[in-house]
Length: 114
Image (tube, one colour):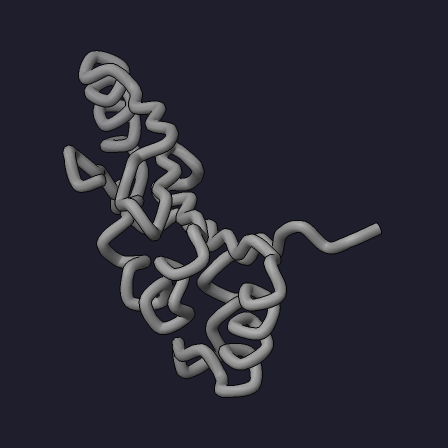
């Protein structure tokens, strides 16, 4: 069976403890893309916070994909085209935020940033 894609989470998987891609990992992922393997980075981060890593891995040259906002958005690195976007309604978002106000949490809200 031929390897078709590599899907990696960014934090805790792709990045080391210093929050960088090691040279060995970078070179391995560049070689894989050159061999035709699709690279997909997935994260709870919003799209803008993922772009540095996609550029470092030259994903725009190989039509790599970014799965941002916990999978709510899929973007083609080569075209910047949004291939998939699944947002919740404002009403549901407001209900969730009201519920979260009862807890010691800091919700992350993305609005029109992908």
